[in-house]
Length: 149
Image 1: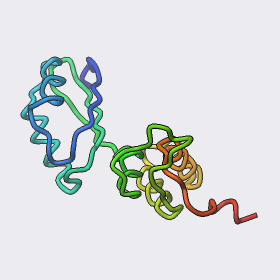
Image 2 (image 1 turned 90 degrees about the vertical axis):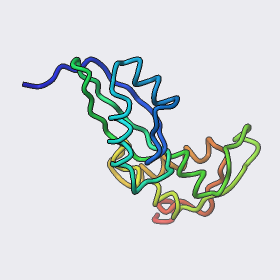
Image 3 (image 1 turned 30 degrees about the horizontal axis):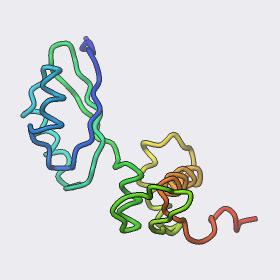
Image 4 (image 1 turned 135 degrees about the vertical axis):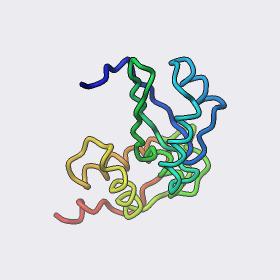
């Protein structure tokens, strides 16, 4: 018989670096979960993604057990890494802080595909490019689908 779900919890934790200190400890402790058990399992699963910010969706069951799903890093974080910028622009419409190529956008879109609600890589690329523009990161070159006509 399936366990009864009592709730969900979303966190963003650096891969391989989960520890009981805030924000992980208080968030899990308030739900009555075993904090150290989560940290051990999370660190073991994310060893190859050391240091990357990873969203995690924790399903909490009524018997205080849990399951979790590790998602791909946020598009904004991947864009900042690709453009080698510390943070996005405070005025994205006026002040551009960096630039990124369509090839880099395609790589990010292909990585993010499982977590995006897009059916094609092209539509995923449009989503990532929109995120980049809203962060004040310029997209260099012409879109690959614009030259196909």
